[in-house]
Amino acid sequence: MADTLTVTDNRTGKSYELPIQDGTIKAMDLRQIKTGPDDFGLMTYDPAFMNTANCRSRITYIDGDKGILLYRGYPIEQLAEHSDYLETAYLILYGELPTDGQLQSWRREITLHTMLHENVKKFMDGFQYDAHPMGILLSTVGALSTVNRDAKNIFDKTTRMRQILRLIAKVPSIAAYAYRHSIGRPYNNPDNDLSFTGNFLNMLFKMTELKYKPHPVLERALDVLFILHADHEQNCSTTTMRTIGSSQADPYSAFAGAAAALYGPLHGGANEAVLRMLTEIGSLNHVPDFIAKVKSGEAGSRLMGFGHRVYKSYDPRAKQIKKIADMVFEVTGKNPLLDIALELERIALQDDYFVKRKLYPNVDFYSGLIYQAMGFPTEMFPVLFAIPRTVGWMAQWEEMLLDPDQKIARPRQIYLGSEARDYVARDQRK
Ligand code: SDX
Image (cartoon, rainbow, N blue to C red):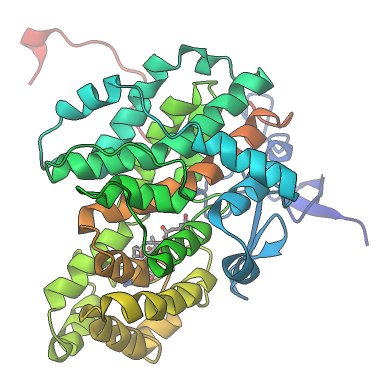
């Protein structure tokens, strides 16, 4: 049997043979299907890209039915157990696990880029004390495009890699500054003796002590959470990164757009929305009423942290996060909202409404409980998602830039508006 699709246009009786490659047909192959010479030709209509591949990628593989997630072929469970965030970031960016030497120079490179231009403090001072840190992050990173003027030189590999390093290293520093700004505390300088995640904790939480010492269990827990959030193939924010990048904008501006997409409560803002939902439910005996409200489809009553466009089984990251929760609660004490979360999960996994719709806990369902137990305010949760996802956005952006198939993104539409009509003078309008 040939790898082709035979379609017959019943409007004309004509048949067409379309090649099938990688489980897809090229949308452009449909344009030849016309009813006459003036016909534009067939398009596909796919709002939200439910069934459209917009690229060929070698970075991350997800099997939604089997709950499989691979970064460059390595299972997320093995990376969570054996790797650390910076090594995983190297893997995602370069495609291979680093040798000892490569990892050491990679760590040194990132460490030496964590310092921020003093102007960033001036940007920060412009924000109200209670400005949402995600709004601060995306605006400040966007503003860095005015500082690193060479960033527009996106096709020069050395310059491009310098921006990627700067973003991976500086996004946590900006996030820490945003947090310090919101609590009215002075900014902390990076401590080059600490790990990537240890230094982030230092810039967040160092007070008057001369040298901040991160709690090793919390440092490891946050580092594994960073591994779990590093990339996730063509999600909403990565697609935004690729789309903005396709016009050849600089990576700081593209990052600002991707972070804006992540900020939404249906995407990376869900971890914040989960905590608000658990707090609103308040106690175990309110769970049945809340579930009933969700099932009634009442406006705005979604079970946040549940469901996924791709995973129609348990999100493998959520399984890992539940393990980290136990590790963290050993140190911080159990988050009282955990019992409500576990009860919601217990009911949802057996209730036909959720089972029929294949709604399972996703990466955002338990992460917020850990962040809260570690002392992060709820508004910092999407920022804690954006920090590790920086490397995923950068790797996907660079892959798009270097892909000969890619060009500026510009979808078509189905036009339902008025036919052409003449202008009506103001005194003639009804
Ligand atoms: C992330 O894409 C990625 O990979 C994202 C991410 C990444 O790493 O980048 O994995 C990170 O964003 C995880 C998702 C975080 N978002 C949330 O937890 C918000 C709550 N979840 C939903 O809003 C929803 O499940 C989405 C947005 C995640 C997925 O939405 P889809 O695929 O568009 O599904 P849908 O909205 O069409 O829902 C299908 C049905 C609907 O019911 P019916 O209209 O068929 O009756 O399922 C229902 C929905 O009402 N449904 C839910 C639900 N999610 C879907 N009902 C209650 N609670 C939910 N959470």
